[in-house]
Length: 626
Image 1 (cartoon, one colour):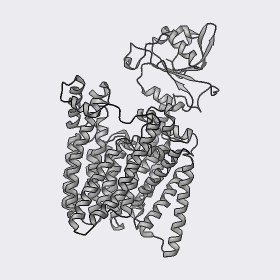
Image 2 (cartoon, one colour):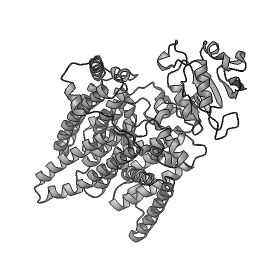
Image 3 (cartoon, helix red, strand yellow):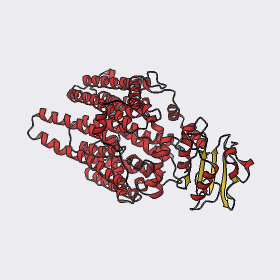
Image 4 (cartoon, one colour):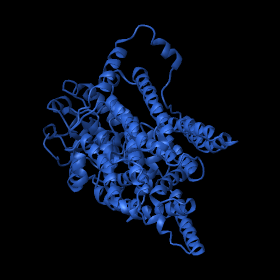
């Protein structure tokens, strides 16, 4: 199985890192994935992305040779590096991920528009999708996790989409297991219970966390991972420097907003590290710390600059246009209605509880308070970290305020009126910061208990109980975690109505082009159709929803029969698929059909051009009566 092959490759790399830096496997597995992603990124910048698969395989082989040499030289099998409770949990999760994500298909709007679609483009061209911006709507989005998903899916038959989710979930789990390095075999039960708690915790913020390719929640895990990596030793040398350098680069390349989280993480490391170096009183300690800090800072700059250059080369813009100073100055003048409505909606979403299925629904503001209180308890349980955690709490609270101000700026000046006044996706954006705060507090509680430093109240049982209180306990995601086959079957049924290159019933040539019609719909259906049919040519250049009188008129285009016929003929469409039509469709466009009595939804029609103009002749039976 391809999935297990790549897991084995990264496990060998992680074991090599564990031996080299005297760490446990559960701690080095995430840096191994980081390194693989960055190797692929470098190949992608140069062009031939497919070669990166061979490079990572060779890196795994070299790591295996290194392990054999070290085992012979030291006469040691390094059991204490890989025979640990954390490694056991990692192995169990690898097998669980293979089972849970089997048969999965993308079904989300954002997956169709970018997060799954971009990997399809990569797999089709064996290049970074940014080099093919004519096929993308969001080419400026950074590619880190898409690269990992490409690695796992590229060699599968017919782009097996379940491997996308396996790659994503494996990455997420790798960011959760490092805290288990604090547990020995005598506390295996606590390790299992504690991991269950932090595994379920993201569901309180993202109801589809383990079945969605969107990266907002994973940003939170990366942010918390970097902060925990520093707090676990508070020494910037050797492996911690490597962790931060690789992690910061991947964080920047995960999403445009990742640079904000990377800067926040390094700012705290710099603040805390310099204060500790000064308090230590050792000559030159601050200078040595700054030299080590230059590595992750340099990784951040290189990642951001390299991607910015690529985006600029393609003529794309990241972050919109406009003068920020003049925009901010405008805030002191009269406010347009958009700003007033947006601010009111923003504050409402910030302070009112989120509507979900949890026993204890909380507002984003309440989540922040809860996270800070949990960090205060961690300070009491971990007196050696008291000063660092005090600085961390202050930094996270101030950072959240700045982050909210930045989001509000985007809603005011870069979102459309429709999205801004509804503060579209606000909970998702806020969750990236808030989940990191709460998860870090849970990690510190588990770390304290694992080393017998903490009080019973901060034990794994409390972490699990808290997660159960705030997570949506009756959601589809929970059912997917325990009975995934049913969810996968529903996804397959949902996607069955959309043509794929394998299911298209007619012979297809490179000159063919399919027009997609889905009346009384918004954007989901056309995005799903385009994603499913890729790389074959599907379009709807005159519009896909022609019913301007229906409930979905916002997404409709007023197009006459003559205009549509002109589009079909001039742009070379050879087929028309009526996925869904309204009752008024036949009367409006009957003159274009060879048999006006044979106009039904779910039918495929060939575009025929002649002296009488465009005629649509049915060539494939209807899936369902329109």
